[in-house]
Amino acid sequence: MVEAGLRVRGRVQGVGFRWWVRAQGTRLGLAGTVHNCDDGTVEVHLRGPASVVDQMTRLLHDGPPGARVDTVDSVPFREAPGAGFSILR
Image (cartoon, rainbow, N blue to C red; front, top):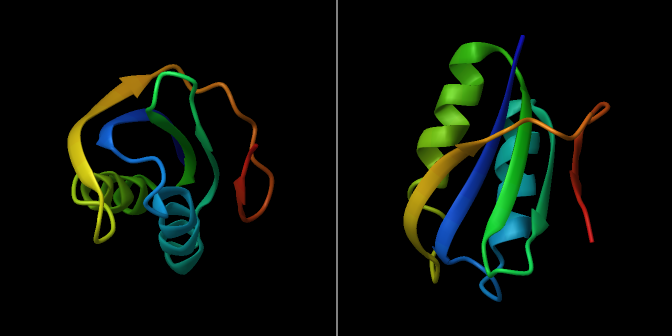
């Protein structure tokens, strides 16, 4: 099991990005959280098998239709997700 904290920059708020992240994370069986940040970015915290976390990280580089992802950067892992995937407010 590995943990990853990621910050996604671009047009990622107001386009269903958090809901898409939760759906993808759930589909892949990851534990995690996703939330909007005040600076217009979205922060994602993941826990799961290394290969699946890598797969989700690759998905974040594309995002859902309507989003435009400019960068995905690593940030310190701060969340302690339980089972499942949650959207934080």
